[in-house]
Length: 139
Length: 309
Ligand code: SF4
Image (cartoon, rainbow over all chains, first blue to last red; front, side):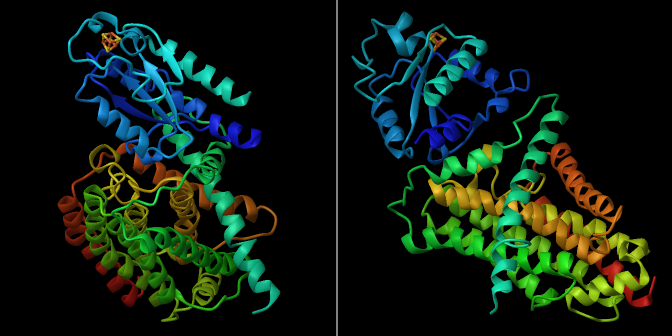
């Protein structure tokens, strides 16, 4: 399996799931994919269809309306799949933590493998996080 | 069928060679595109990593799909591409025919497009069927010009239709691109191939940002891997076809090897540059472009070839 995990770590295809964020994190993710940061160096590619994905980049607070859909997207993805939560929203609730229509626990919706804190996190922080994920995969 | 047939099909000009070369050229494509955009680009074995990763992922057979067609179409397309690669490669590297002529080649190339269409419409997804419909229209658009382009070398070789005869005619009278009609047909052929490989500006069926990879949208795991491998192998098949038809084949002695590699890489780099400098066009614009402008030019090339210019 080690050989396969190394192949996987060198070719992570990313699908972007937006779970009711304030939209800043999404913009920052788009920043990450610009020529300036060039994540293709690590084999990371943005794909448009969840069937091609290896990593789900999830942003936002998951309100009650979007949570079932996020669960559905997770179930549609081919396994093995990793979930990287981008932004303080997903990890602690950020400024929306007292809102009335959010789900109580985001981990209950989908299993989250990694959190990237920051409101929004810098692209450098996201690259560092993905590099850590690659490190975990390589053992 | 002797043992050599299997060798030709599976190892040297066929499956193994074409797959490895195609994946490497796919890297050249990504690297040159990255340099055009002032990026660094992926490492050398990126496409191999992608392919092996896809082989190990879960295959999802979509519930609403026609299961048999959904699974078979990438595999049949893979078989067809391997066969084309073997036929072209044997003519190019060994200089004798493997059976089949230019007409068979055109049919086989069409089967590949038909497989994309069937695979896309088998998934039962709206975007996939949209992509399949666009693939049909694109096929309609480029096929006529492509057939006319293929007629030019046939006429110039003295109405011979076998690939190896076209090649030996070029050895006798110089590469066909040297003549006016040959050059004209070569340019049109290059654009047709761009459309047949659905590269930008003709990536209308796959438009990632619009209909999410079209026919490939619902594929995952190994089946997607086979589609990606087919696309990589096309980076070998189509330039080889152009080299046979217009550039006088390969030369495998001394400096000829370098010159042959340059021919191949030259075609590939021109295609990558066209790909990187043009935005996607609409399907009606593509149809107009091929029928209104390229087909008359190809027809002119055919007439000139008949006149012997
Ligand atoms: S973490 Fe901050 S920037 Fe990101 S979605 Fe939440 S509030 Fe917006």
